[in-house]
Length: 353
Ligand code: SF4
Image 1 (cartoon, rainbow, N blue to C red):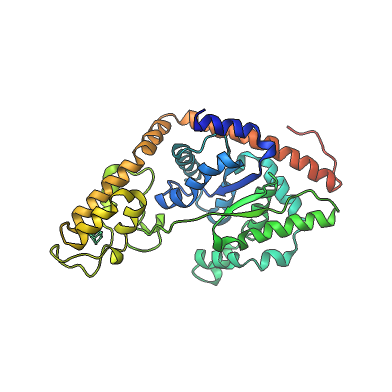
Image 2: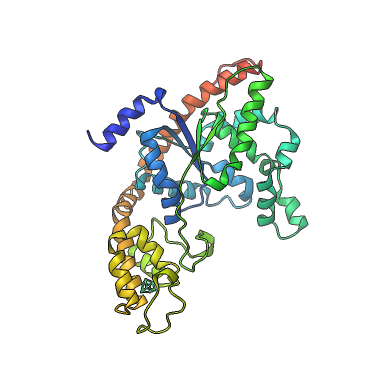
């Protein structure tokens, strides 16, 4: 049985498997830091858990409600990246948040039981406003009702699917606290044991620096994207900061002081690290040549992914159909949750589409 067949069989047995839920804002083309830190984990999770992966476009509006012109294209680019790295829509449920209106209704219902001071004390809210606004006036403009309520929306994202496990890095556990508190409060107010408290599923996130040695980020121009061409990749790798103490090619290099290429070698070309170390430390290779060799390794690594991505990009209708089908699949689960929640909260379950 192939790996895909095994994963599909496991997906059918989903009622015995724990449910995992995760989402990503549509920020456009993803970089290789996203690939290593998030997507490779998701590819593994889809075999191990019943998986719900969401492109959370409403969350994009909480901070970018004035710049919406690229949202649709950004959703498409994220979907292309997910599909090309091996997230399988026949195994995992891949959907777009705004295609599942039940999440919005659950957000509304949960907001009724959310205490005002819970959202106001949310530490990440202050950080977000600080990042978005230059001064007090701008802060007032950016701090909308939707932004303040984003932890409730995030909780609705999770609870609509009764997500039991949420992938987080070791330092991000606090991000889950809000959803856990809200699940607990709902169960306590209505004296039910309905929502599971979502638990963290810790993930290892290898720290991949940008080519300038700083944190990798699209807005810093220091990233390598999954979708980059081989030429783009070479250009970026050429900019990588190496061993700052190595001035001339004839100087021996130090792999332990090599800021970017050496850690990349350890991820993308582990088999050649011994040779690189020897050639670097005995000055048999210069940094420029060494980086070009690294670029070839990165390009080899991503070639099949990029090929799949190119094919998918040429067939946008197919990608949209995959997302539509994912939305419908996600709605089936979310509708059931909503129906239960309405009943628990004493509302009538009116007929709906
Ligand atoms: Fe880094 Fe390679 Fe230069 Fe050595 S030769 S410092 S490993 S880029």
